[in-house]
Length: 466
Image: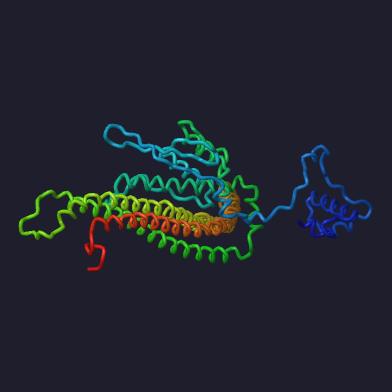
């Protein structure tokens, strides 16, 4: 870059003289000198010749197109969702009368394969994924066991909730722009052997963490904007507010889905009570009026339980639609938002904190070195201290690079969050469609029921205002 600044170019092209000048500056730089135009003033007779190697070594070079800013992610929600869709289904294995463990069938649409996984496989996968991508949004896993305080949740409901959470976890991972093509994720979604946990750990040992494999990790600082900390603080606060709002939306959607299920139960019980009334075959007492139509009405009530059972089924379907199409999409986005907040905490409490602690330790060592200089000590102990200081300087340099790479990744992950935000329209569309479909289906059954009541109950009995 220093040489480019000292070479005259017009619209990206070099003149013959500028080209020779650039080669001369390269030769001087190869000699360990800082490139500058003044260096060329001393080369009156002959310009220095750069070492270009053998011509055969140049055959591998190709003209590379101008690359976009590596910090910017060109993402849309449609592109993210198109990466993969993963299904997770329960395959319970029963031993005697009790459920011993649960196995999951994991099916990737992208890889077109199904594999079988236990919760412990997910646990190891999550652990290794977090080691490999410590500076990315890695969603949390649901708990392995049901907490005792959740006494109002049955074991079956807990297992179903965990299955849904595992499915959300895998879809977020499989659609992540930096996870989706990684060997670790591919292994989990495609490896059909019995030792998948060993395979995952071996895969990580071969690749190590992202800082060691990313080609621009050590140059991250060069790509970061000067106001990166201010941008990070602003984005973090905005995403925190979005997270809080979506939590409230999810809570309300859950209540609506629960009310639909309760409505299904109430309608079913209402119909059963009508059937119970109609099933009463006892004769009317003598004190009943001879004009009473109760006997006829009572017989007619039996058939109404069928219609109310249909209404109950429609209400239950409405509850499932609200849960599957609305609540699950809200939970998916909330899982991503929570993983972003976890990432921010890892950055502050992890890399940043370790860097500050290393600087403090380095300061202590320097003071010890100054003390050793003032008060002579054994040569061996001084040399050991010097060696430790050099090691600490190298560690600090590595931590600084990791800190900038962490900020680099945070900037990209923030873009990922905003790329996901249009999912709001998907959620609203699902909510409206579920309501329209549910009310239409319920309305059709009520409309079919009304003329039946008109035939069963003559005149003013029940259909007109009392």
